[in-house]
Every structure is written in structure tokens, then in C-alpha cells.
Length: 265
Image 1 (cartoon, rainbow, N blue to C red):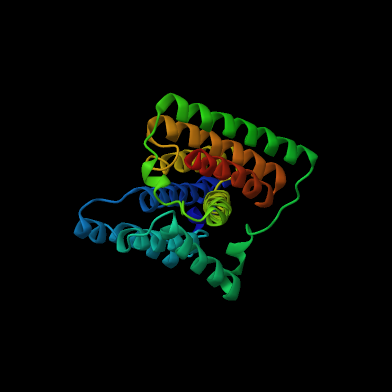
Image 2: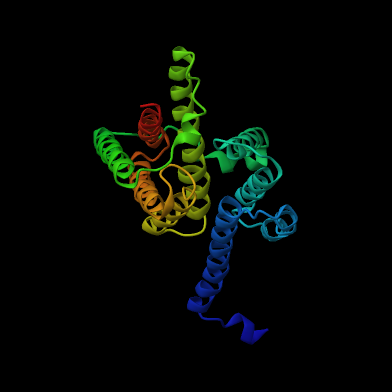
């Protein structure tokens, strides 16, 4: 008893930091796995569901600060392997479920604290405008230099009804911006912020995962992933400056609108 009482404060600090760091590594691993991994072998996908489920159960049983976000990533993985959904719907549906639950279950409500407009100021909008300009130029240059095959995307456009094209473009840009900002600058940003304090590390991690998820998106490939990661970092700066998602969503909307116009033209 006497020896246990005489514990240096420094050791106590380290013992508290170690679980937080372990949880930090686990939530990153789970997030990356659920958002990025999918095998052509359906049975393997379902067998590997035990990985995010185990992490979620561990977080729940240990009352970790990121237990609810961990459940979201697991749910997203289930939608990814269970349904053949396009245009990010495998993310949009579980995201909607997550938001509804966190808003209506009192004990979960704190996990929707990231869901806010923020406090953008003139500097925020200047950064947003610069980000829009950089992303637009980068996308145009990427298309001209890499000459990607966009026939798959072009085939989705309702070419016989022009008014539907406008509706489709605005709908795509809005939905995609909302979904990706809610997940990356919302859920992931908030989850990492519950475990660590260096904002630059949070910014880098969410940007890297954001870039990786675009391997088969638009832009695609290694160069597309690099561009998306840089763009994710810029959106992170806008999010940090505005302390909310309003400015990042608007900024992201214009990039997605550029993508739609490139495909259409």
C-alpha cells in the first residue's frame, strides 16, 4: 500500500498518455481499414468484418472517447461490402444513420458537436477562395496531363434532358461535398481531436486518408491521391480557421462542380 501511494507524477502522466496513444493508433487503423479496404473475395470481406467489430467492442467496453465514431466506421464498412452502391452512397447512408442517432440519443449527442457552421471570418473566406482557385487549376492540369478515361462518369449524365444535367451537377457537388466534409473534417477530425492535441497531426492524418480514398475516384491514381491529399490539407486549414464545416463545405462544393463540368465538357 505504501509503495503504491508513492508514485511520481511523471509516471502517472505517462500511464494516462499511453492508453490515449494506443486508442489513437487503433482508431486510425480502423478508419483506414473500413474506408479503404475491400477485396474481390466477398467471403474474405465478411470474415475481416471481425477486425472493426473487435475494435468497436473494445472501445465500448473500455468507455473510450471514440467508441461511437468507431461504430460509424464499422457501419460504413458493412455498407461497403454488402451493397453495390455508387457515387459515395455507401458512405452517405451510414452517415445519415449516424447523424440521426447522435442527434436523438442523449448520451450520443456530444458526438455531433462537430456538426456546425462555425465562425468564418474574412481570412477564412480568403483561404477558401485561394483553395478553390488552386483546386480548379490543379484539376484542369491533371486532366490535360494524364488524359484519364472519364467515359464511365460521362455515361451517367442524362444527356437527352439538359435541365436534368444542371440538376445532376448541383446535386452531385452538394451531396459529395456534404458527405466527404462530414466524414473527414467532421467525424474523423473530431475523433482524433478527442485523443490528441497537436492540430497539425490531425490535419495531416485526415488529409492522407482523404487522399488514399481517391485512388479509384476523381482524380485517381497516385497523382490523383497526392492532389486529393493536398486538397484535404487545405480544407483542413479552412476548417481550423473557421472552427466549423460551413466554409469547407462551400469550398468543396466548387471543386466538385469543377469535376462535373470537366466530365460534361
